[in-house]
Image (cartoon, rainbow, N blue to C red; front, side, top):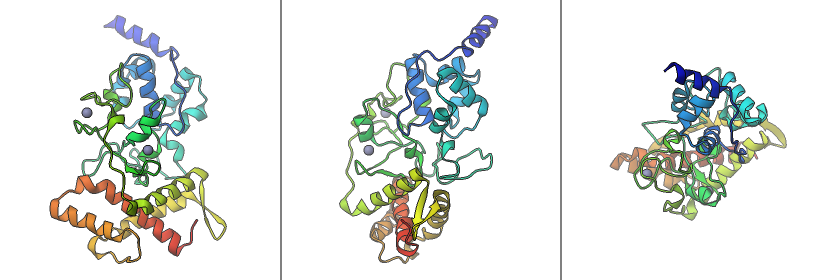
Length: 299
Ligand SMILES: [Zn+2]
Ligand SMILES: [Zn+2]
């Protein structure tokens, strides 16, 4: 026992042996999982050995939202990446642009919670993006509330394996598998059968691209004046709350009004809340976009 403890302490002082290059918009947990696989370890063991004794605990929490200076410090020391590069992988790098929080433990509304029993889980993916990647990895934007579908592949994101219905969970991925393998049934997530969105949903995809562009450049434009993206995303959260009026909603010219009402009908009649939640979030996002463009003339 004592010997094992010594060994662990020794490894914790060691640098990572192989450091994968962070990919564009990659999530911290995705990068760490890819690194754990390269070290032939599951994520929790890898973190325990190389980062902290409580790696098991860390792998159970939302690493992407965790703000812990010591944790970031050890990652940048051991990886030889800059502090800036490490922080850019964390969802915390969007603080001040997408959301604000005061030492909050859980993500604000703009970011999906990792586990949410009422709706879908927070870690979602586009199987076609994964299939096109030369190195498959998970994006930060796949956790943003407004990013419900992939504008490139025109499909809804999903939070689980379509064969065994298990949710995506990096901490379970075995060291000999890729990040895009279901830990439970070993199905390759890139091979999901996908159903393309019908063309009437194009308006919602346009909304996603618009929010994404504003977040990336940090501002939106009203009458050629720059408005901080944070202001837009905070109003977004408030507006989705106001607009979600179910059958009472009066917004007749909104291009997806029938789709919105259909979703509510199905939720009520068949109690399909969970299955339809991604669709509902998608339509609500499009609705906020509609109001911003129409009434506030924000661009
Ligand atoms: Zn995609
Ligand atoms: Zn599976």
